[in-house]
Length: 91
Image (tube, rainbow, N blue to C red):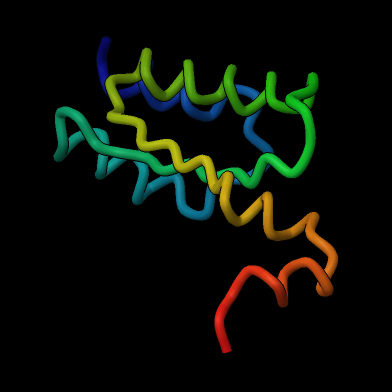
C-alpha cells in the first residue's frame, strides 16, 4: 500500500486531522508509526465502541502499531460515591 492509499484510509470517516501534511510526512518517514487510543469504560460495552474499533482497524490496515489503554480502575472510581471512596484509602 503506498503513502496516498494509507493516507486515504486514515482520513476515511475522520472529522478532523490537525495537519494532513504532518501525517503524510509521518507515513513517508516511518514504516510502522504508532497511535494511542484510551477509553474509560464506565458502563457496559455498547454500540458506541464500534466506531473507534472501525477506525482502529483502518490504522492497522494502514500499517500502524496500535496501543490501547482501558482505564478500568479509573472507570470504577468514577462511578463510586464519595462515601465509599473514603473507605478505600488510608488517611
